[in-house]
Image 1 (cartoon, rainbow, N blue to C red):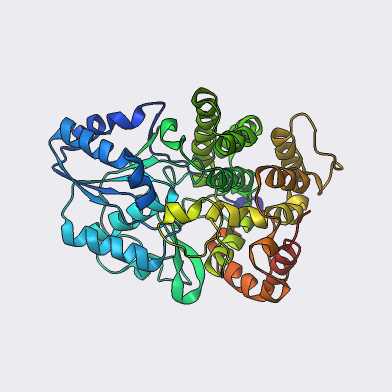
Image 2 (cartoon, rainbow, N blue to C red):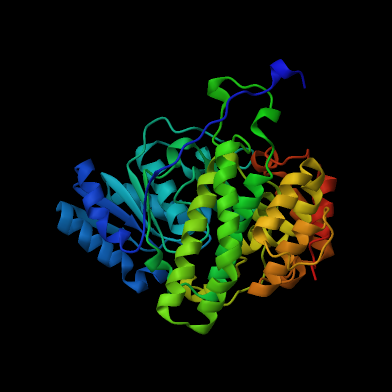
Length: 439
């Protein structure tokens, strides 16, 4: 590519951030600046049962005098049907002056969809990314959205993305626009202390893949030059996103296994709080990185894995979801093809892949050669240590499913465009086929 035809600009954006123990008690104070009279609070049944949403609603009313209307039926791993239900509730119960999301990425993404569609005309599929949906941009500004994560992983409090399953197509996709980014992220590590072990492991793998994928994404200056109106939130790896991703990887190296072990053992709350805080910080840092650089092959492959699940039900998720539906949690789905995806992308940027492996394994505990096998070995070892299933085969997929999974991943062109190497369907088949078992 001629030098003059390369991109010379990268973009960076982030919500206002409030981080720390007790931060969720100050949301009412923060909303006062918006003169709110009616607030919609979005959560899910499992989080509602913890009492956090009711407490936050009470504090908002006490600080602002506003009425808080609660929608507590967000679905873990949202579908088009669950989001439409939430949107219909928002439209029928509105108008509102602000939206507050309390929960994991599923609640935050549901709140993003509601916020979009209570302020803009049309239906959900008008805004879902092409080619699955019509990829329409919002016409009007959205309401202030305060995102309060209760899991350590998705980074949804920082991003412009809203993810959902389209049931009829058996595919996971999303809505992507800068206006979806929350106005404020309130990250209170205390809200994550009751997170079950498998939720901690799966959500943590989402942090890991956010950091690794954004760090290994196509460099922003390797894209063709763009006009201002052509720029999208995912602009490729860049100096600012790199700094967030590197720090997230370093923090995961020191806290991830400990956080999962604490959740399994029910350790002393003080000890658990330390590693939970580190995980919450890593999730936020990774979100600030990938929310601008983007993610690529593991996330593209994860969408059909989650969308085509038949009968897998991980421990800890049935209670949170409120039903017995089969589910491959998003972070787990992303991780299942990650080792092979990073083996495939190694040749595009060997130095970055090796540095990422050293950040995750600073003591060199994983025995592998300093080449394309090192990062996959580090990731697979971590997956095994924290109890992530051993590849796609362990969640119910076989060789006969590869073509269907490739078809679903190939539809995620927005993500595949961020990969550091050009990707073909045959490449995806190689990654997915080699991911049926990792060890």
